[in-house]
Image (tube, rainbow, N blue to C red; front, side, top):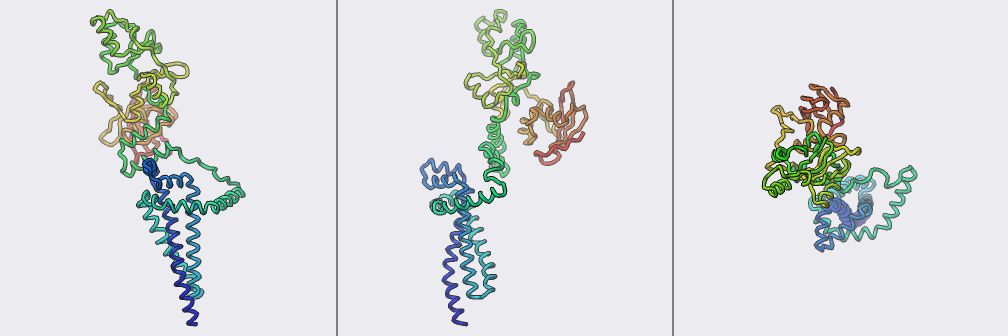
Length: 439
């Protein structure tokens, strides 16, 4: 009995280095999967541009992420099974049937600590550095285990097909724009990106989803001048305006015949010695530029740059003027409100002492979200009044109160069928919630 035990003990000690090596490989595969998954692709791309061959190898591995992760899982599984099998065999030789229990407990603890938690913790702490370090060996294993993995993938697809599931079906991966925007939002939540920077990046990415109708100045707020006014009165109207470009109409406001630039008016005045009676405003006005309300903001921005002009009139499908859009309106979607010394201060949003917010009905939802850091939806309506009407499915009366998206909306003032003012109060931390309409 004693010689048998001694022999078994000797074989157990011989097995220890093999188990340790298998655990080392298991830790490598676990850490490699975590490191390359968590590595910053932007940082790696920057290193690749600077000529780092290791960064190029990491990027190549990530380009076929499914094969890389599959290889790491296959290697990790093989290492764990081999280590556990050898340890179990050795402990059974030493302790008999109870060695199975000892092996299960011992290998669970060792594999958990040294092959899973420890390498993954290091990989999470230093993902970029770890990725560059392990990339050469990881590439070797991907190449070596590639044929085996291909066979495994074929079996998986065949099995799924038996149950009517086709690999690759399901929701598509988020686009680059969506992923970048979500990343910036997450970094803002974690305090790594300032709110202003988050809004700027978000505004830039949103340009592709917005139309000029979303940012235009509505025709009810347009400053226009009758071209047939006496020249002196017309000049006074221009000087009283806060804008440098003013649409001119004749007969009716829908009939816009040109756009007067204040600088052109000053040049004309200088040419006639300041005599307003000698000016023909219609002759110095620029031809109006009409754009459809469905034009995308990105396209309109490019059109502004291409035509070297900053002003366009927005029309609907029937050719009726809906409003106007300027280059500044588009830029404000990116950088926020741009104010200069001639801008008028309009109290569109005012925070009240009780924490609620007094909002004019014409305030765009996107502007309110930006100012208050709210997330009210703007897909179905452009203005806050439009959102209330859309959710209420009716034109509310003064004093009516509605609750949706976890906000309380009280109608304060109406002008005919238009909501002129609202009081809004967040009932919980601002965010998007399913509508719960009451009224």
